[in-house]
Length: 557
Image (cartoon, rainbow, N blue to C red; front, side):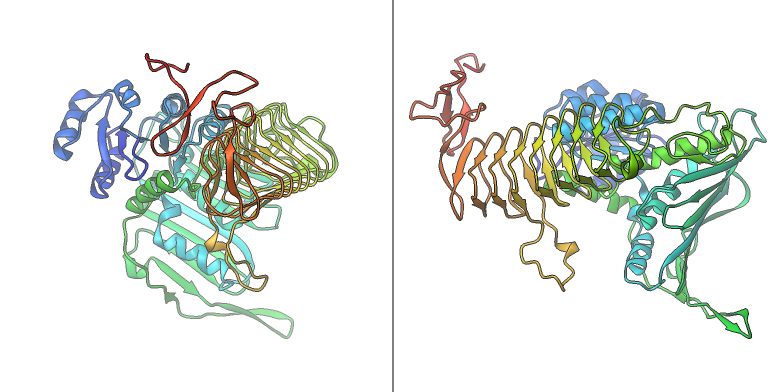
């Protein structure tokens, strides 16, 4: 596949899919279209001069790098898993899936394959929302206190999903991005006017551990269209009104409250309209997917973020079915009301004390020592063990059967594959991605910026460090960020890696230099390039890479 210029197939050419087809064509990466209606696919294929293929043909086409699913939500998990199994990168329109188990499978499979999994939470890519995040981070609003979002219109009315699942995922995604945490409780009141089984309006309230509160009001039975996000801080207020012209979409209000004789009085200020660069958010989102495929970076709205949104959707559904009683993110109604939708399953085994806050209901079959801590919003595979004083930060994905040693820190937003072993005193910072079966020796070091200073903010300079399947990193070795480690390479103890490492390469010294080759089993290869443990034979390619030797029929010898 062509990672330098990824080729994308869009699956679903309906109401929203046709916009994705147009944008991927405009940025020069559309390779094929597909739709359940062959006539619709043929129409768009002819218009954009790309093949119209069935889904099986898309997955079988080795020249197609990524698929974009603009299909009904109930098909997202099935089609997404099939694409990931076929080695494709996947962009799924919201929601990621309809239940957490399916979403978790998608996230874990993507991590084990080293594939990009991205969710179409469009407003995270809107220039106005990006500016909201920036102003909040810069302290322009002071401390965040309250957020609310209205998404109202007359139509489009659906029967396959209620208004909350149709409208609210975008708002949930934005609110979680602003707060940087999951809510403790969710409370939803739903009203049914057209059908007793499908809610037409919902009002959802979320309370966060930091004390921030938020609410979302959505309706498709509203007399006029309104898409508004309001962000309230101690030092200012912002409104993002998406249905306004570009020069009025984002307004900053520097209102103040002054106390006079013990009485609070408002001092109003005129709105300051923040200038924005006009750009179609969907085009930004499509380009981001392509860039993530090319560079291996984690999408802003990755699978873990999609799971966090899904957890809130499930909790809101539970609350609505419990007649508006507050529901915790574990899926249990705070007022002991019935939980009919079964949004979550189990808690991590061996958890007590502070560690009981391990993203409740999300880590069945995982062992977490009582002194360890796992933040909300992490995805951890069955059979993984997290030992003394370890900390797994938000947004991190850890595969099945891993061992996370004592005093290890992982995250935020780190990806760890299946069957990895991370020994004591290791920190995996943002930008590190471990494929399956990676061994990190005690006290080995990963960096994420090249020239850190304690007083200089460089979070926008983090560099990716992908580590290939089966790689071994020795004790006290240092991996300088921005370099990739090939599959089954071996980094000697104390070595300092300052350049990309080839697959199966043996690296030692400061700076690290290649001193030979190692087999899949970690054995140093002699001149015959035959593994003394397994007997597997290898050969060097013309460009100096080591590959397993194949016979005349093209099979591994």
